[in-house]
Image (cartoon, rainbow, N blue to C red):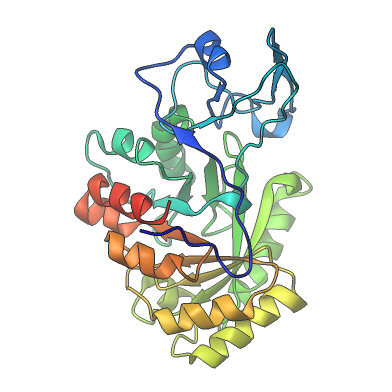
Length: 314
C-alpha cells in the first residue's frame, strides 16, 4: 500500500532489516546494526553510553542486546561520527497489548517478538495482580522489545524491568476516581518512590459501553464525533496529556470518530485500540491514529494476525 504521512506529523524514517540467525555484538557493530533489549540495564539506573567502533561509528545502545532482536535499525557511514536515533515511544506506530489475566499459546511470544511490533504493553482491566504481571514480564523481557506497564490499579504496578509506565486517566468517566482519584492513592502509597522520568500520562476516551473498562469506569460512551473531538482538544491543549487514547476495548470503532479526534489533536500522540484483527482494519485506523494497539486478536486468532496488522501500517 502507498506510504501514508499523517497530516499533523512526519514520522522519523528508520530503515529496518532482519538479521540472519542470532547475531553477536561484534557482528552487529561491524554491520552497523543496533539491537535493542529493554532490560539491558535497569531503567532507573540506565545511563546512555557510547560504544566506539574502530571505523569511527558511534553507537548509543542503552538497549543493546548481544544476541538477537527481530527488528534492527541499520545505518551507514563513511569514517565519520553518526549519532544513532533509537525509537522512542513517540515514534511507535504499532503496539501489542498483553493481558496478564490471559494465557498465550506456546510459541506465541516468539511470533509476537518477530512480528515487527514496536513495543509490548502489559495491561488489563480485571484480575490484574503483581503476581500475574511479574509472570508475564518474565515471559517477555528477554525478547528485546520496549516494555510498557499500563496500570489498572495502584496496587498492581511494576517499575523494575519496565521502560515506560503509561498511566491512564479516563476523562469521560462519571467517577472522578478514574480521572485522578486512583492516581492520588498511588502517589500516597509510593511515598516518593515513583520513577517520574518514565511516567507517560494518557487521556483515555472509552467508547465501548459493553466492555469491562467501560462498565468499571462508568464512562459516557455514546459520544458523537464532535464530543470526542472536544474531549481530545481538552486533553491536548488544556491538560497537555502526551497521549490521547481512543479505546473501544474489543470492539472495532467508528472511523469517523477517530478521524474527528485526529483533526482535533495538536501536540498529543493519538492512540487507537479496539477490534483490530485484520490488515484492513489496521490500515483504516492508521489513517487517523498515530499508533494502533492490537490486543484481543493475539489471543483470539493467534500471532499470525498480529504480523498482518504490522505489515499493513509499516
